[in-house]
Length: 189
Image (cartoon, rainbow, N blue to C red; front, side, top):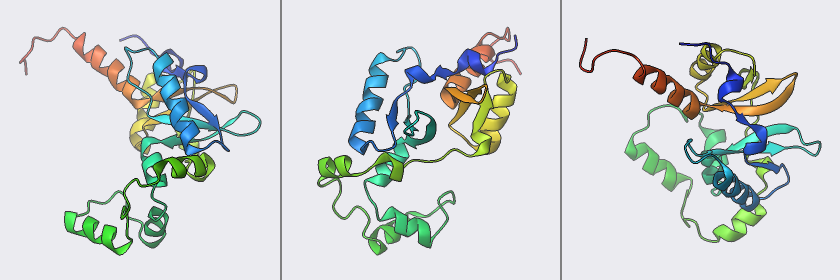
């Protein structure tokens, strides 16, 4: 297999949904929809919106999960009280948490008002050092970063500036295409 560089697979920043950190959740959802319409329909859809500061630099991202979590502010209480988001929880425990914290007791009521009041800067996730990869890095290096950090995407840097996003879905598709190109008979051991 030929050497593939991150820049060969990344989604350029200009093709990604972006909003300012002062944008509302509503504006972020609309930016995501607009980016989806303009994006290459043969590729997987975007799952996040990049957040820019006043100078236009990317300072964070808001994922689908962040949007849902943001609509129920009581999750902040759960997060502060218990830090076990990645542990397997029983259905009984999850139901007990919903009742204890009155989570989703008014499911999605007043969603329009919430979406216009909530600012993405209060929901956004600030990427850590391990979530940046150089555009000239090999796909092997990027896969290692994705796996070890359990990341859904990496921000791609060229000369210290974010120029794109390397998404796990695009990496997975590339690896699957390489596997399918193998000349191994189906059902072989």
